[in-house]
Length: 62
Image (cartoon, rainbow, N blue to C red; front, side, top):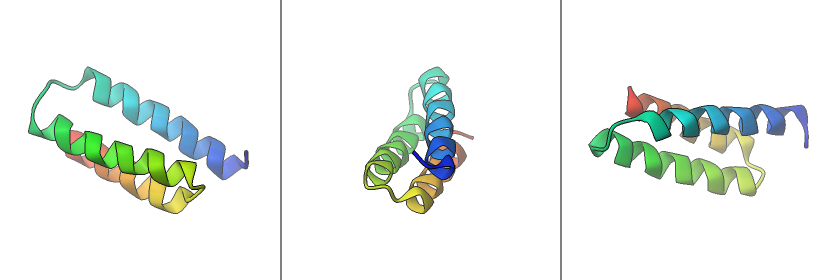
């Protein structure tokens, strides 16, 4: 893994932890959609898209 991929993987763990702690509701549902898109982008080695989706997930939880 490149340093960028490692950074994205760490960000995914952080966002997943925040999602796990969030109360159920529309914000959590919206964040899940972004997180799943981030996982898909990360699997495709598209770190820019993955980071964009992780930021969107974090924003959705706010």
